[in-house]
Length: 110
Image 1 (tube, rainbow, N blue to C red):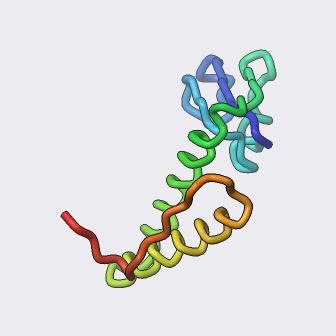
Image 2: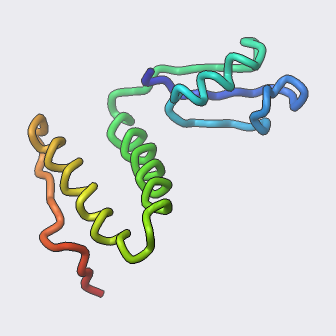
């Protein structure tokens, strides 16, 4: 679901989520947590088309970071570059914008 979630509820109604404003994509896990909260305290808005690239990229970057944290340190660069190349290669197939793929196996210039 491409909604943004804005729960504004009191702590005892939270269903395990800390009280506050969450402007994030509603994932399956978040959807489950939101079901435990009274609907009066949850506001959802549709993801605006203009914000979609930023919000989706932010969500994806967080998920990739979590996944790469679980990869052995010696393999992180190579695996990370491969993930990026695969993902951007798939994205480039249906994209009118220019997609830049990493050229190497993880060397970086500083």
